[in-house]
Image (cartoon, rainbow, N blue to C red; front, side, top):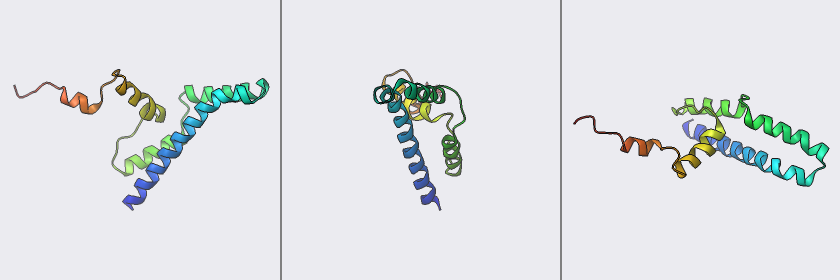
Length: 108
């Protein structure tokens, strides 16, 4: 049962990432490929869905799988998998590993 949960979790995260990247790409491709009256409402939908706290069923499903696998829940997919890693790479955020190694010794 556990390997099936892991496979389900990885498949869900992969599909969710592909969907997010496709929506991001579509936002910039639509004005080039479609007439303005077709592109504008679709771009508005993408912008609204991407910038508001609309509950995402895929993130809810991921959190359910994470709970069953004994992992911590995430607040949002884009923040967890895209924004947070970029912040760590650029040095704007500390990773938990780096933060753990920088804690002062409490036994002194």
